[in-house]
Length: 394
Image 1: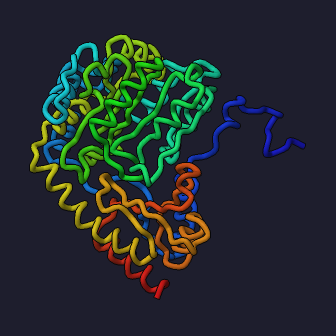
Image 2: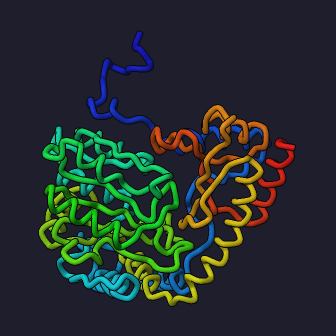
Image 3: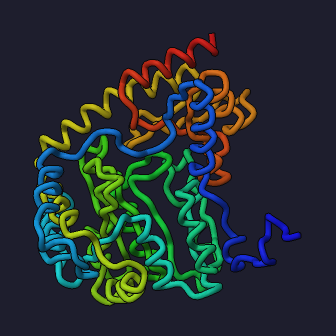
């Protein structure tokens, strides 16, 4: 009789055993089961905007999709108009000049860009610097690329910035690439041009590619900045960006990266062997989205400010401390000293108050004493979550 758990004695590639199913994939399945039992879980875990894009963006997608001549394969580099729109966006908001022909590569979401960059630059055994706490995909993709991970600590007492003394103590001759993410997820720490200048200097001195993942700079942030604004940054740096958070287009999967022409060309070699280009009406809609005026961003942020006030009240009800200067789509809070750990507290909230928040351990060991609350739920849902939590804590 065949073993049902291992049909025909087939085993996966070794790299499959280096990663596990994404935490949210498993947890959302559990939440769906709880909802099927009628528990009405309020999810404050995922950072997926719940509001629509600008109406003109949607109208453009609908109009362009009806054209008979837009349904074939598209260029791997994106249409020229989209690259120009990204260049104009960077010039307007970040003060960064990019050559739309050679220094910009549109992506089907910036998460996919993490894989493209890793495959383009990392050989088996190459070292990668990954922040702790940090986005789990940096580690999982590094493992899939068979790279060696070197974590670097981010600490609340240092404003969640890299400790450059710690970095200098690592075997930097073995390290080829460093992931950074500012404004930071999950901590909400903002960047500064001083930090970016130090990162560029560090990368140049040690011949380490610095990749900044920058999707949160428009959310509750008065002044978006870019790593590429540092003079000479493009020589050693790559920056990814996305319309997922800034324009409420997470499910549309539209992102980009920018760097020097050689880096972009190497990444394109990988990307062009993985996907077949982006649906042209999506590109046209992205062009419209990138032309949004300040008033639209302000309106989006006005909604998030109201939600953040409620999220802060939830943190207070849980006895958590947090930094009110955080930016981005989340509130990151330190759990009370008497709490066992973040996972236990998150499970207590889930099973007793029927509210899902994210335990910080999924972002690395430095997140074990923290939880994260998403602002991507309507105010009435967040108010209900606050009421439920206050009830179990009273």
